Length: 165
Image 1: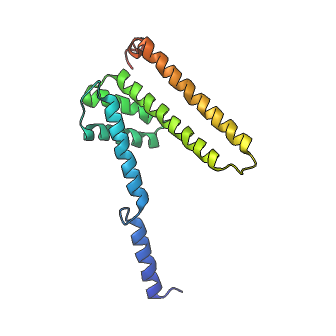
Image 2: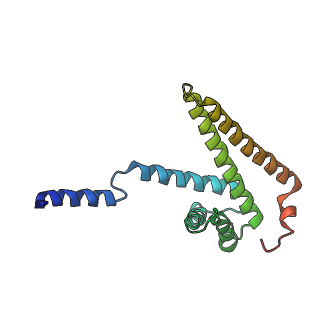
Image 3: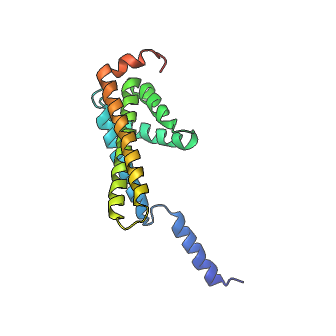
């Protein structure tokens, strides 16, 4: 049986844990990451539309929310549609910027994997880690080559086949 003092301490702990801004540094890191992503996406969209920081941020956050609801990261396509509907950004430009974001995110993940694998030099399954690194690097390198090919052949020409996109 709990004493009133013990219940009171437990309730304070629950209340402190339920307040998201009560000193949890993860929230600060996540907020900083979102701000950096908004800035990055704004820079990618700048040649096509001069959008304010909060216009881009609202579209990005709604797209991320849709990623939670929809399967297979379809929120990214929702974000492209939001840019067209709310801000008149060409869908092909918004889609190309989203694809470039995903590729650059993948490259960063592979680089982090490489740094982690280098730091784990004493692991017995080092060949498996090297295989993963090589596989990840080749996937994202081919994606970059594909993007460069699309840039050369004009993404707008390729997407004109689907006018409803």
